[in-house]
Amino acid sequence: MPAMPGLVKTPTNTPPLRVSVPDTQQQPPRTPMKKTPSSTPSRSKPSPGRSAKKDSPGVSSASAAALDVDDPSLDNPDLGPFLLKLARDAIASGEGPNKALDYAIRATKSFERCCAAAAPPVPGGSDGGPVLDLAMSLHVLAAIYCSLGRFDEAVPPLERAVKVPDPARGPDHSLAAFSGHMQLGDTLSMLGEIDRSIACYEEGLKIQIQTLGETDPRVGETCRYLAEAYVQAMQFNKAEELCKKTLEIHRAHSEPASLEEAADRRLMAIICEAKGDYENALEHLVLASMVMIATGQESEVASIDVSIGNVYMSLCRFDEAVFSYQKALTVFKSSKGETHPTVASVFVRLAELYHRTGKLRESKSYCENALRIYNKPVPGTTVEEIAGGLTEISAIYESVDEPEEALKLLQKSMKLLEDKPGQQSAIAGLEARMGVMYYTLGRYEEARNAFESAVTKLRAAGEKSAFFGVVLNQMGLACVQLFKIDEAGELFEEARGILEQERGPCDQDTLGVYSNLAATYDAMGRIEDAIEILEQVLKMREEKLGTANPDFEDEKKRLAELLKEAGRSRNYKAKSLQNLIDPNARPAKKEASAKKWSGLGFKF
Image 1 (spheres, rainbow, N blue to C red):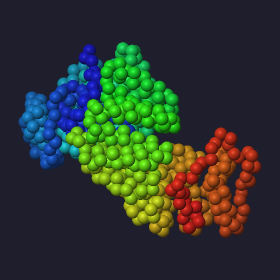
Image 2: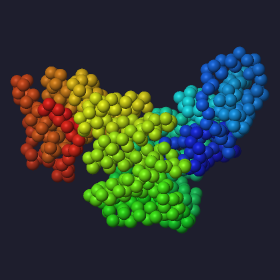
Image 3: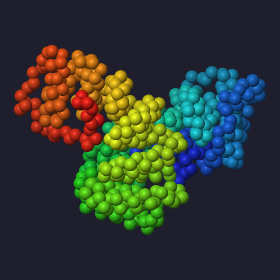
Image 4: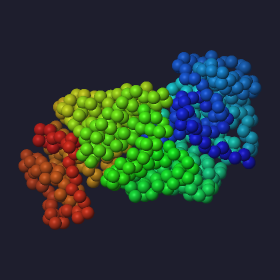
């Protein structure tokens, strides 16, 4: 029985836009929470060594297909394989993906006709026939669309491709189905549709497990790939579960302290750090570092040292963090050069550390050193690296009350990313940050515009996360400042629904939206609705959160004023203060950016 090919990492310097023609499998590098996946639909079975130059779109798939619809030669069963070979040759010869696209469309049409004319499969039969040829052709067609940056046009062929094979008919069909789901997941990821992307990866993993079993090393690679996707979606519990499974598989099939285990531990450290489990994150990083030291991979050791420094900084062990960063900096300067972006990234970490410890002069100096590198990038530096560094530096400038400089850096980051596929969610995040800064500067129209642009992008990506709810709340506040009360009310209502679903009614962000919505209803003359919300908020604070929160007295006072205006008294008796304060809860701090509007108590 033929084995399902494994998932092999491509080198990190692989060109980002590439046509991959299915023959064998490969997988693009994915760095969790730092970079998006390669635009190549990597899970398709690309033929090794074949790539194409980026070319501008010029062939309309609709018009090209229309030319072939009535072509009788497409009924020839030998034409599809011939046209698919021409597509490969066009890519290999450098003719460009447009010519290959024309051949691939015609090949797909030929295979479709042959499938329609073929006899139905024998139950339990294992032969693929034209069905698998059609699946392969659809994979190639989608890969060519992706190489042209036309990711939305790649989705329909892949959705068709995953329905063509029948995994029950044997490993060849299982491989075709697995490849199609993973390639579709990569393509949807490039379009920012993270939830649909993860659903495709999960279906691919399910098929692979059914074919190879739970403990096959290739299943471990797919589990890690899916775990990375969950990290990017900030679903850390699911990511941790899959990463643990990957570790178990690699321990069973690899030598002790293998490179595969080290990679798993680095991912597990990211997950633990994101969940606030810093001690476990540190343990995983130290174990991964020991493996890299034993195999003489100096640059990888330095990269892990940076991660160790990040954990030490989170633990407020600043001297140990400085030591780790300086160790990494020495290695990067000697191995990569003093102007390499990895050197700049360490400068940024040191700038943040010195800012946190109050050494602002040192912090600013490291920011300037990093900016000099980012402003004159060496060849091979990706725009994602530059944009990420500028974004982190902007946060430091913002915190030292230099918002104009911070805005310039965010605008530059956004400009770098705006033409890159798969970066719409990242751009939306930058726009949301810009909106916050505009708001704190009193530039409310610009704040609203920035939030609106972010919301539009997040809606297009099908975003329903807590972050989306927070952005809606912030946009609503900007609308309030512009006296667009009705629009603000709609935004607060939508934010409430999302945050209740994602965070629950007792979360501080959710309570802030409740308070803003009550203030909006008050401004709109909907006094009874405002009273109902404030009574609900105070009841939750008194019963579950305690009254030590500084917002409690404000909300209690506002409710009393509304009840007085409505001519009635509060219908809920508060318990004694002794019974209200949760001994395990710490008083929440008000954010420095919190704003009030016209005494109504809006919360940012």
